[in-house]
Length: 120
Image (cartoon, rainbow, N blue to C red):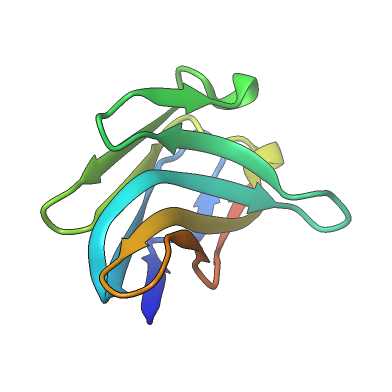
């Protein structure tokens, strides 16, 4: 079994910064794509940023230039550095990973979510 555990969320004023972390643990052979999604109340979950195993990245247009995704393959971790936060960034942020397991076929895994609240 694999677990993804996020940390680093919280309350911040507009213009501030936060760094989210996500640690993957369990029977992991390797990890493919990793990503951060977010979901605000009453809205659909959306992809914020994605990073491949080789380090190529994609971002939601509204966060481009403000957020940076990175990963540490040796530690099975993914990070999201969020700068110049805006009230519209307020949401629950979820970590995602496509995990190649040691004994079973690869599959998607999700974290439990961490709340980010940006006050105006």
